[in-house]
Image 1 (cartoon, helix red, strand yellow):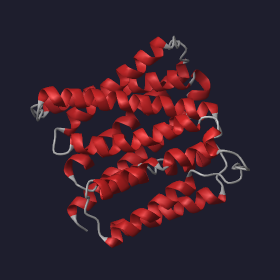
Image 2 (cartoon, one colour):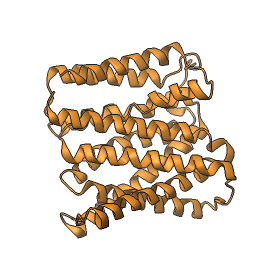
Image 3 (cartoon, helix red, strand yellow):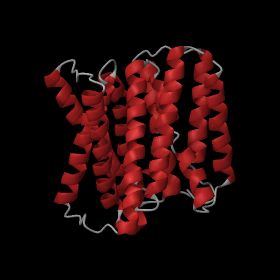
Image 4 (cartoon, one colour):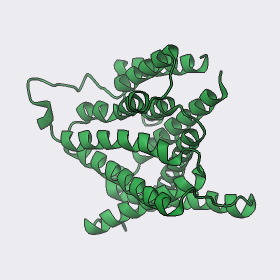
Length: 298
């Protein structure tokens, strides 16, 4: 297998596991303290983990902090941090309004849209075998995020589904963020870039909580460990995809693999929280695994 594809594969899997584990731990916090509270505190801890890694890189390893263009780079990092915060908030708001079984597959499609933009819009070079593997993974992503047992579409205007507008906006913005972040972090000091972007995202979330007068002082002692774990797992995810985007040109591979973060979430919830996994979700999981295997043998 080509070295670049190996890095992209590992980066995508890192994003999948990081975000998947973060979502799993979030199940333990959101019902207890609220979505915005969980989001804010988890990102505070994630920023702390990023800071420790950045300090280790600078002081212990002695590697300098390098910006390709300090002025414009800082603006880009602020922009992508705030944009990602907006995406999180839209997703939480949309899921809070509507039926998750309808909205979840809509948001899950962002990775496929991002891959399509990268291939068609930016000329990412992909072989026919790679396209087949990516299509298989995307199909698995849609299946694992769809619970047909609860999906009763009936005859109605899909756009009028509660929460659809927020999720549709979040999906479009997430696709733009994914492709844009690939272009910003490519060939840069990906550790520092991802740290600063994440820090600006955290500031934006905290400002949103303040404007909305969300009480952040409601955390119970047993919940702290889960918020720490969410922050740590998110740090892993962002570092993984940032490394992949910086070191490779395989945007579509990283986007689709990291976009399959529901796979570990669902099966961990089944194993530890005894949540039900549908036949469709099980099939989707196997389809994603088959796609990953195909990627690994290309």
